[in-house]
Length: 67
Image (cartoon, rainbow, N blue to C red; front, side, top):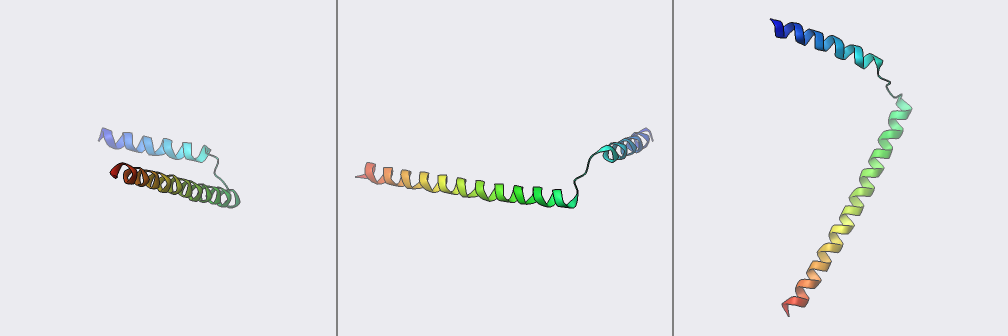
């Protein structure tokens, strides 16, 4: 039952540390969420554009070499 005592101690310490943490308010949480979503969309557009460009360059190269 030593593991049970260790688990209980761990949970007690974890709860104590979480109480010390600074949690964001709803406004800050909403702003951060919007920033993350905008970043994901911009990164997706960028990766899609690079992928499409590379696809077209390889396709063009294959047509030139294939002749």
